[in-house]
Image (cartoon, rainbow, N blue to C red; front, side, top):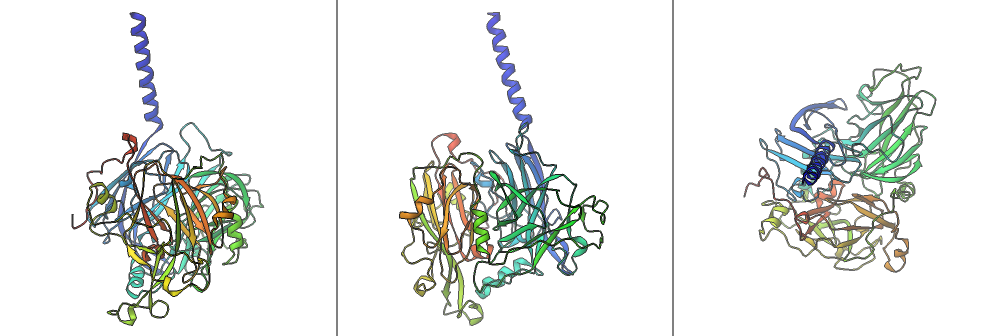
Length: 581
């Protein structure tokens, strides 16, 4: 009997130790985000910009794989707002995902909402940003997910981590830029500068004294966590005279490969190792536009930061921002603005670090066309409200459906509470009309999509394949397509119209990259696969914000499974409500 008691005591003690160690290993990080107007001076002008905690960019959050984030967002600004945790899987916690009117109603001025979620099985670079109007132009920051406590990177430990947020700056209120575009039906004004960590850099007016500086020692290796947080522009990024070793993207490890240039669509992240192996000096880190849409206006300027060797004769240390040093940094060569070949070579270099668990049998096979459109001017509109090409209004769609967000309820609330009339579940699995998608001479009858709030229903556990096909309607373009709540494998991409008879031979089912945002090639296609193992309502949209405002989106409704761990959690008590609720 004493032996049994001793054994039970030992088991109880072991279980207690196990739970204690788990509690210590998996921490809860508590933060407070105060949304407020802050005076920010760029390009010689001061604006009342919306920020988090008065910071632009916002605070960097650092967690370990397995940790929980608890972020209370207090809205002291004059606009509605939500925060999206870009790339976080949000397993069963869709209420914390953040897109306005998709998983929640907005946080009204004077109100608050606490986002609670655990980051599980993801390591690398993610980020957070506003998902309401165009507030993410200034409301964004990095989210660094380190390896679990006690484990390490699958590459030599870097001396330190350096987040580099590539952004866009308007010498105006971005919310007004969007509102004017919606009013006129035309394209919004392009930004006035690109930025690195909120600073335009030496090549812009009134900017050189605050240029971002990244210090490095000779022989030191640092991990650059590069994030494209720009609103509407894919970007090239490079560092003068230095090789970049890509080791991860979208919080997933990759087989390392070396490159001179990194390409990121808005929403994408890339982890690169850089070593201080050049003569001590100052070297520009630079980013500028990749522009694939013909005849579309874009900013053709270049943003810079400085990689500064601490032992450089000119510098005597340094770090943070430029302190009036006059020695001019070395400038890198950047690809041409329309260099699609470089983009293709880069994207086709991605391979998962380990053998991927790609679904090989498919339950749901979707073919989704993506692109722009033009609506005829309504008869009751004056010409100043139809400033798109030939007196039209810009629109965009997936499978000829231009996505309309509700305003009375969020889609997730409507689904959870069985509220009728908010959405339908008849999003088409293929385009209603088959045509030569990448032709330069597409019938104008295909330019006007229907408008609706159409979702596509998926059973829990279903294995999904989506062919994303760019179209030449208005203009072909590289579209960064982001899926909330999921990572997916990019098993193939190519140019022209996807042909299942020959293009399936290109499928990589061994080690395709796992990502949350895919750059669909201009005049081309990409194929992604995932397992629908996360119940909720998850929007899939173009991360060029001008396009999502025109309707380039759809959403999946993933049903609950059978067990408790296959069902969504109940909504939190402080979930924001819309005016009509």
